[in-house]
Length: 241
Image 1: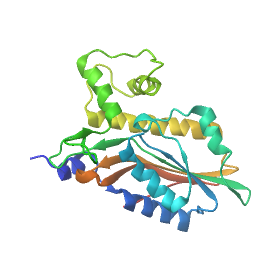
Image 2: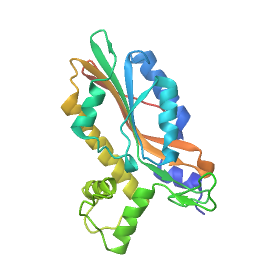
Image 3: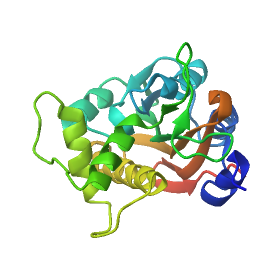
Image 4: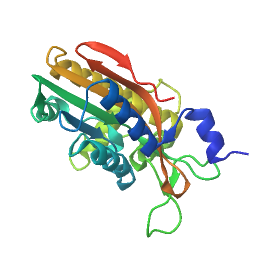
């Protein structure tokens, strides 16, 4: 019988409580890689959903005020101009600028292993997470996908256009698949933006990417995906095992 624990073991092995993920990665970066609250700008990209706010709050408690990269499903639609703004805001210490990038889409999992299920304070019954991805999946399942850019729904239009590039042609994805596609899009687009804006001769950075998971009772978990630092041009993985 499916359960929250069995779904986590199958799809998100190695996931940590979100607070532990932020604490462990932050301690490693502070103690071994030269990052600190005084010399680093933390940037956070999660879904606009209020449930996603647990990660930026945890990061801010550890790293100070953060630069927001957030949009629907956590996709990175800020572009070169938005990313360049962060590039001009970081502290300069010892002639270098340092950045942390915490990025993730999110998904809910119910006590019985129900995918996409969460609860919300003050609302009866269950709700969906990620709602934007569930809406996209509904269009795919219904066979009526609207890909024209809707001026009244810009972010969701861009979400669908971007994620189609990550999906195999002719196969209907599950919500697990679609969330993984969002994770791939986020990490790929972040790498592109970093390559365009940051210079290892002047900048150090760390990427802490994964998937936010809302457990029964909305306890936040985090599955770590691409986690690494690049300091003075040397890339090192961040192991949180």
